[in-house]
Image 1 (cartoon, rainbow, N blue to C red):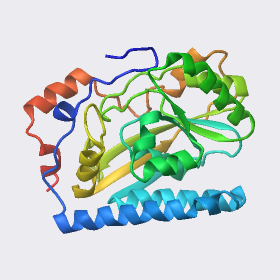
Image 2 (tube, rainbow, N blue to C red):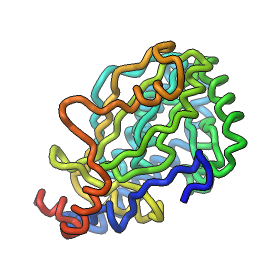
Image 3 (cartoon, helix red, strand yellow):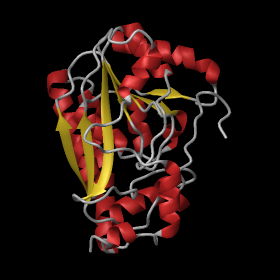
Length: 291
């Protein structure tokens, strides 16, 4: 159970929500993907000093390309739709499903990240995140929240882009939590636009996949293994209409606008319906139906 207003939890869990894929790459292929991912991360570590000295006009394309390479090394194809994110101070917000979300958003717009403090401890990636200028927050320390919001507002006002996942927790991808309002106050204080992004994982053009989900008591290694052993995974990144600065007077309405229901008749699954389906359908059926 959450211990503060800033410590939300999702009802998603690996046992209920995450389907084990039956259509698996062989183990040698998975090992090759893990090796490619490690090499790509180490290249990022080596390039960090370069990123710090080259102008943004040259740095941002490099970061975008490297971020795409991280996802591709994991065996996941990337599809980005919508207009390019603008330059200048910008709050980039998205739903949160997986550790893959971080490089996916960097492929849209390189930015400083608002991250939970635990990410510091991740092998390689934790150091990369820290050295990229991330804002770390201890989610069970509500007293530190105003100071964090003020620091984000200062960065936004100076022209930086900041990435946040306002749900405050990962969800399985077929259900979604409400956007918490605090981080939107930083955009209001800095007078910068908000760029909503919607993330979605699927197998080719078929139904949604929960294989990349990193939820509940799931470990990073088990989530990583599901990704590198799955075939035909696609990460879809929908860059939605920007919300201009001053379009909303308070953070409540701004958060709601950033999380408005997608158009085209695609409605989010209720979590209860998802849980019922996963109990009735054998694990991995989602993938086996695709051959």
